[in-house]
Image (cartoon, rainbow, N blue to C red; front, side, top):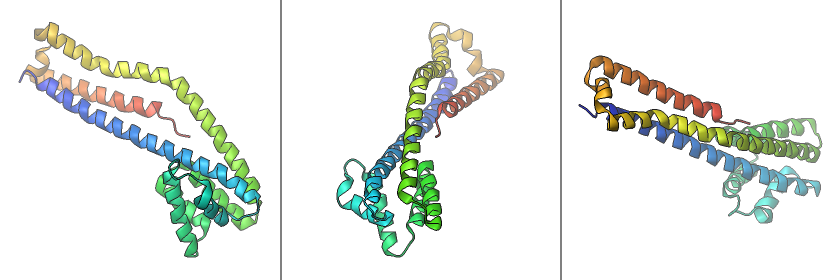
Length: 213
């Protein structure tokens, strides 16, 4: 089949493109959730400074402070935590479950800090204030890294598309030159190896360009 190689390449590329698109969408959702949690923490600190407990601060945020249109995910999660507290569940355990469910390191770290401060009767307001500043610094560093990598990612996209572009170009201007790739067993083997290496390079480049903080 003269178009067998092109069909295989199109299928592999399409599947890989779907996987990359799903990964990027998942990363965007997680980033949005991280931003909502940091907003929640920033708004919780002034409430704690007024003398209220963490449990009381959650009630205050849900009643008047947090805008559900601006932070729908964290509002829904705080309502779940609020329900757990009413069932006599420790607030630190609720945040621990949220951190495990969301996979967000900031929430997991916050749950650990809250648990330690509860056990040691530490100054929760001061600890959370410090935690908020650290998270803000992490956010700024992450944004700087994104700016630095933006140009490299564009170059990466060009390099990822070059093999398919060269193959299609040769298919148009000199079909006899690459006919051996999809008309002989050896050619199909070479084409399969090239497709596999191209797919692996796409996967590896996506992993290397991904920022985890």
